[in-house]
Image (cartoon, rainbow, N blue to C red; front, side, top):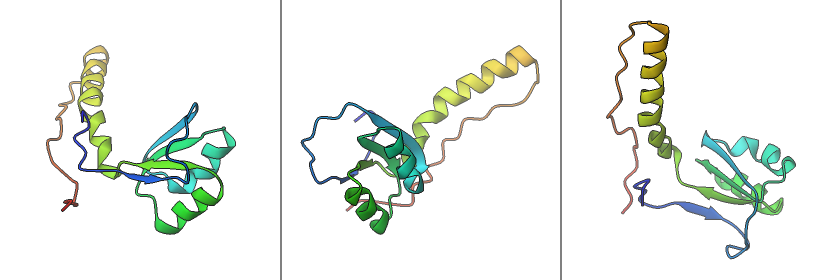
Length: 109
């Protein structure tokens, strides 16, 4: 996959359901699932969903895709380029260093 994921978790009582409205929140967004529901989301993409929160999401009819917290690393190259552009425009002369560190503590076996 383009995200180089080792796996993802799905919370759903109907995995075949066609979806038309998606909410996305990076990191640990589980505590915001009610806001996703209030905006009409049928599926919520966020990381680090806790066990009991997953049950609450199911009870409230929300499907969830949990790709893990580390997927946020896909933003690094785009943000680096954006910060470099801002640096040139603002002439701040700030050194922009793109992280190459793998902060994912998990290995799937």
